[in-house]
Amino acid sequence: MGQVTYEVRDNVAEIMLNQAPVNALTKSIITDVLDGLSRAAADDEVRAVILGSAVPGVFCAGLNLQKVIEGTDAEARGLLELLYVRMTDLQFGLGKPSIAAVTGGARAGGMTMAISCDMIIAGRSSTFGYPEIDVGIIPAIHFTHLPRIIGKPRAFDLLFTGRSFDADEAQSLGLVSRVVDDDQVLAEARKLGQVFAAKPASIMRMGRNAFMTANDNGYRQGVAVAVENLCNVMATDDAREGFKAYMGKRRPRWAVKRSK
Image (cartoon, rainbow, N blue to C red; front, side):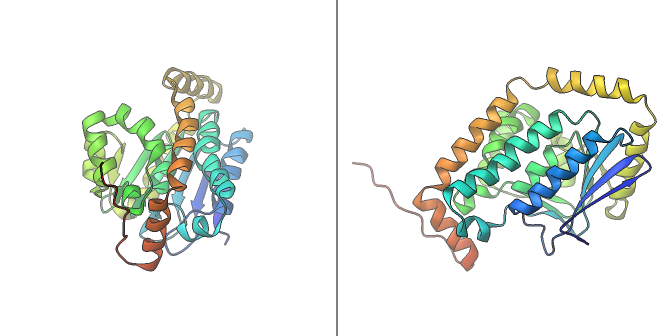
C-alpha cells in the first residue's frame, strides 16, 4: 500500500492516509491527497468523498517538521500553498460532499485536513488540538475559519493555549458533526456517503456549489494571507529554535526581548 490510498466503494471515494506512525505530512503525501480529491471531482460515478486514516489510532499529527527544517524557505512556502490554498480550492470546487473520518489524534496540519471537509465524523477517543505556538509557529489558517465556527473567545482559547480537547468538546463547539464508537467511524462515514450518493447528483452539485459560495465570505482570500503570515513566522529565530527543540525532544530556549 502507498502512503495515501484511493478506492471507490459504492460510488464513494475513500482517500486514506497511510504513513505510519502518525501520518506526518510531507509534500508528497499532501500531493497524493490533492490528486485523490482531483480524481474524485472529475469522476461522475463518485458521489461523495471520505478522507480518513489507515493507520490505527491516529488521523494526522500535522507537518513532518524534520522535512520542513531540512528544506528551504521556498520549499516551505510551496508546502503551505499546497496544504492551505490548493486544498481549500479543491474542496471548494469538489462538487460533492466530503467527510473526514477521524480516529485518534488530529493536530495542526491534521486539523487543516479534517476541517477542509464538509463534515467530520469522530471516534469517541479522538483528540484534537492546535499546538503550533508551542513549536514556535502559528496555526495561521485556523485564525481564518475557527472564530467563524465557534466564536472569537473560544477560538482564541484553543489556538493560543494549544491544549488538546476530546471529541465531545469538539462536537459541542460545532467542529465535529457526529461522535461514534472508535470502531464505527469509517462505517458511519460510509453510511453517510451512501445517503449522499442516493440523492440527485446534479442537484447535490449545484446545491453544494451554492452552499460553498454563500459561506465563503472572503475565506479563500484569508487562506492566502495565512500562507504569508505563517511563512513570515517560520523565518524567525524562535521558529527555528522551536523546530530544533521539538526534533531534539528538549525544551525550547525562546529569545528574550527586553523593552527599552
